[in-house]
Length: 400
Image 1: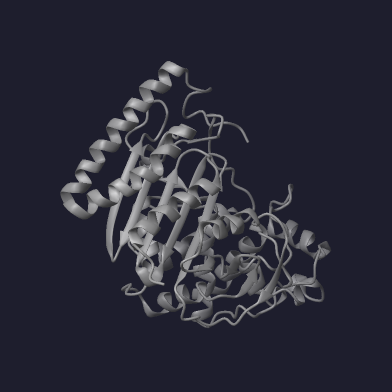
Image 2: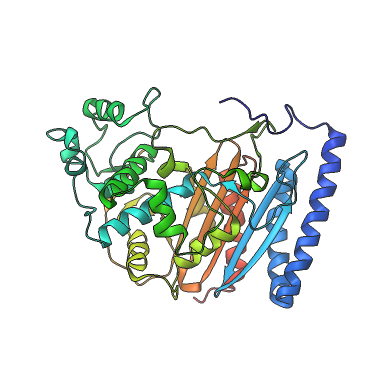
């Protein structure tokens, strides 16, 4: 992938980095002060919790900018740090746009569940029912549910050279699963990409347009895009690799469902709230969201929902980290009863592109959630730890 030319062409000098760090500190203090004015005591308490969790990561990884959104009992709080670019940027706000990577998959899951709630498909359908060119082969046995739970056996990435549906059909026709279908969890952009494409076809529209009209607009997500319009480019944070090289997302086949959304902390907090009790949304969308949170498979420490990864609450941090460590290896999976367990749950999803880092986590029963967005690559485990620490402190002591 070629580096973007929207910013500088190499790492900052130590002196330039020092100037940038001073700017980060000034920006975070000024934004926090504005937040306190909106809800003095609680915002200040949450700010202290968030600062303690995120500032060490910002310093350690020299993150140019970070946007943090928190929801507690239906109230929203936003804490912003740094700049949209290492040079020539503007202060990060709750409307700053970041690539959210695989957090985009939760929207593909929502669209597929919406199609099911609307009677357009069943997640138990074999893939070949919706892709007739694959009939008579492996995909007579692979279901849409297995695509959405990483249990189809499909590999992580769409192979190089695939540019069209015809290319994909040719590849899938020759593909054979490495394990019996439905017996192992193998994280797959392929699977979610296919699920999103099939859902869009069943709903009769283009994927990006359907997500906009069915999810973004009803939830008031006015700062979420697959392609950032020209008039919003100034709000689009520049991404950086871990080595400080500027970079943007590389689009490929099925990129939109798998990793294609650019969004803001403000919009993603709205999405998190829609995933919790008490959300005022359309009944069909409410049903769809509820279906994305049903347990489907258990694989090691993870209970796999439709894209969302679920843990019984309260779960120890080490369990979440172990689940994250297992994400790119095959893990034996067992189907579980797809019904609400009645137990509190911790749900989360990580997202990464080469120059951006995202994390979303929430506890529906507690009505608490967090969104972390940064315009630089940094370790997933650190994001999970930050989110866990903040939500644990917001939830307070857990009753035995």
